[in-house]
Length: 130
Image 1 (cartoon, rainbow, N blue to C red):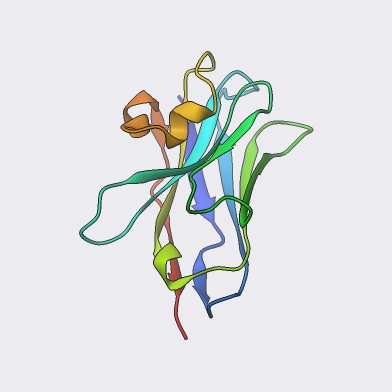
Image 2: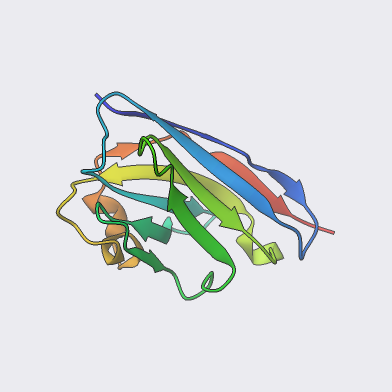
């Protein structure tokens, strides 16, 4: 059984930065597709960034060139999301998720990508406000 625990959320001003972390326990290894999703009140959950089992990454258009997804290179047990130049519209609860390793990173940011994921964290709140 895989467990995912997010951390690093908080409140920052527009233009600021945050780094989210997701600690994975149980058997995860490098075989899983991993990604970050987010959900704002009244909106559907959307895929933000994904990284597949060979390290390829994909991003939603709204976060390209601002967010960077990465994994701990040594153990593949920690997932990160570096978020720069944050905007008020980035305010959301951010979730870490893991899915089957044969999916590509684009699955995370594709429509309905959340349905491909098997395991979810409980989320961490990010608030961007002046």
